[in-house]
Image 1 (cartoon, rainbow, N blue to C red):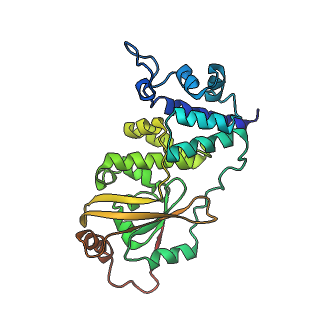
Image 2 (image 1 turned 120 degrees about the vertical axis):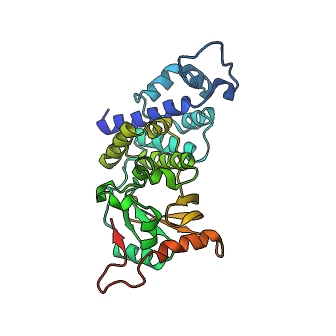
Image 3 (image 1 turned 135 degrees about the vertical axis):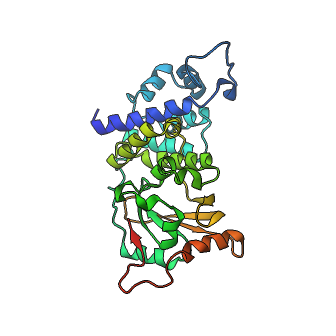
Length: 297
């Protein structure tokens, strides 16, 4: 068995183990039993029985020694683990990677932002917008996008990561309301995009730092929740423009190794829109000749 197969099979096993720990026996019609259980969530033999596979086979699957589960087995495990939506899709993706049915890892991350993308960032003003890498490093932003994340730009370029900002920057920990829901979604999204390439150096550096410095991140990362974010709504307690609720859309940029553009907007004619527009008003009315419109990270 090659090294790549070992890594992929192990990642599938980590996912199964983490999701198994989230299921209580009573959730699936099993008796909880008296006293403390040594295993959080379902035991291996319980999950194997629910999925209709042998205990030995399931143990080999969770330990990364079995790397070719059939679609029927994966479906059965997904049902037993009560997976839905993104969680169910992630199980199948990891199984395909483990088996080699999907042989290609994601393209190498490209941190250069195309000029055409920079022009789009400028064209959506006064809407706040920025571009992030696969693992949430901010690569470029228009002026209101910069002001939306106060303090992020004080960090060195390589540290300007939205997930790091949420957990380690004092403003990032107070900017969103409720903070706990925002960070849970952020970690679940990072887990989702990380699954196909768990040993990526950019990812392992970020995760290693956050696990050491943030108990909250370590707890959420261990849960292995996954959620692909294509848009939604966020509530801000912005230190410069006040409270506002903004919707956002996330657009994948082709041929970039995972770059995404995030654009925020507010309902027209509302106090939220007035607050959002003050992000743009905070920029000087005129730029000096030759001064760049946009800011690359």
